[in-house]
Image (cartoon, rainbow, N blue to C red; front, side, top):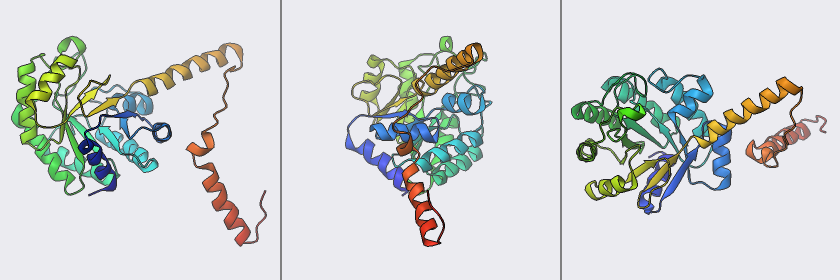
Length: 283
């Protein structure tokens, strides 16, 4: 089992709620680790918007997500959970991309049941239960013995009014949740589920329930995204406008933790040691 996957499984097994905090880059992942979070989360919209300037509606590919996820996972010691969207369009895609995630050092992924293009003007609906089960089974095969945590994402409670593919039926969400567990899901997430609906889901389903958004009591984990990457984009826009309009930026740009976050001292020591051992001059 991969070390990071084991750490994530241990967090779920502990029974204590934890937050996987917004980490859309290697540096922001270091920051959430630095302040004490036990896990990090790379959302699909965070990655597509911040790194590629495209929406997360099916145009953003798993190749692009894995590329960034691998960089983030390599920069931290806490486990990273990544939004794996639908893991492609076929069971072969699901197998291939799950295997790539497992090999990249990512600890967990969530796999959704919406039909592409998703979160768009297209009224898409959800994949059939047998198709989603096949996707999850292929995902588990691709993960192999890596221990990759597979969270099945059911968008039944994510309705058309919010550009989702669901119809809002709690009974259907429970039915799908049970089927996804049968197919090998390690945990489940139901975006936009209320606290009341989540309580019913917890009663009916035998695997941990994960939340997207604000924490809900009794759940295993919260995937908390949006505040980081959107905040960074808003701040950059404000400062760019200030620089364009006034010719200067008045903000305090000092960051006391900068050197620690980028391991400046570690690399300085390596270079100093090399220079001394080889008779080179040091500063």
